[in-house]
Length: 189
Image (cartoon, rainbow, N blue to C red):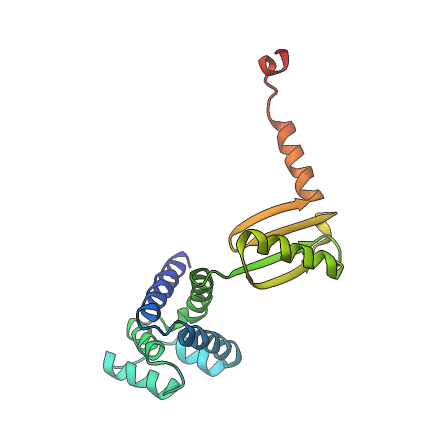
């Protein structure tokens, strides 16, 4: 599974680079969102992508054309043909997720998940949105979750960074601090 994640990231980076060079980033991004929806909504498509396609690389590319035809930009169709030839169509869900994250970062957009200890009031959500926007710029999406295990406060994940302002986080940091041996010379001075 680790190797598949490595392949997915490499494919996503290559597709993002190709889309950028061809000035098709918006179109390819929309196509990848549509491809992700197709994957989730069609067991037949998942079955098609999970099996090894028979024939030569040219025949495999023709199968991809039969499935997707003219529904996507030429860049995405070529990309899907290459995936088919390498036997990697099964990686589509991993690739679409990686591509969306890379495209968001390339366009300066951020995904934010704010997890509150209890159901937040609208003004609390808006305050989080404003504070994050002040530091990181416009937010593409703010998802709000509730986790009572936080006890109080909020934990905010911005892309791959986390800011823990919860009571549970404070207690964990205090607990870890108490486990460290006390430096006697620091206390004596």
